[in-house]
Image (cartoon, rainbow, N blue to C red):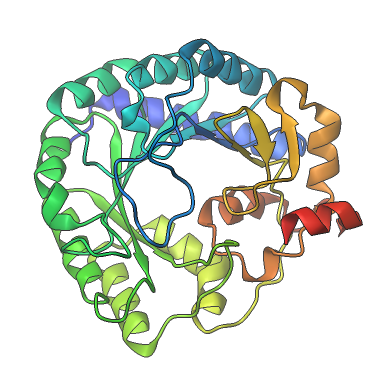
Length: 332
């Protein structure tokens, strides 16, 4: 069973207060940046478009520079992602550097490369949260992120991790594997880990409605692992999307949320790569201000929970206008 010391809990509270302070004190600082540390992944899931099987890790000096640039933009939190970030041999050094600059630091992994040594290194670096993605019980062509492949990793995390661990599953991948997500949620609970569920998006990050069976599975999972994450995502956007209905909200991608690809360019998100496409080294407060006030045509059916969450505190402040024609073309 995963346990956190009093010091860890106090640190979490302090980090949360700093995050909230940055969220309400200014509109023009990022709340979350997702940083790709390597595009390479050890898996090849059919529904994923965020990986390749050959790219080298981003050099450590480049990643450290990006951490400092994000800190200079007053970024509140950073998530290291890929590809598979555990394929970067110096990931813990990057985590430590981000923590030293006062940011909340998390990562997303498929878990296959987790070892006791990696967990201890990430503990020592000050990692505060890990999302491990598990979609089914046995791997198939659509998703190779299977419970039977990584359950022993969950046991290791439960025993050794000092950071929070959330197991995330995606519903809507296939009708045949719908009930698998319930077993995944039950297994996460067995090890004292949190579980969340996302709604499948297509190659543009937009809506794929759930079937009746998938809706029932979603309801079951939220009872197995009730959490503020489930409640927040459901109320913010999933309730409508699950029924095939759009959402009316102000997406602040490019401002409150940044997606930094392996080449160091800033994009709206993982599914809308191409704009603004500005090097992070050249990204300024003027860019943050422009994107904060830019309406995204893809937002009504967006399923990306991280972007919804980072935009929610600005729901009723800061008007938006349609993107310039060249921007709209890049996002479609």
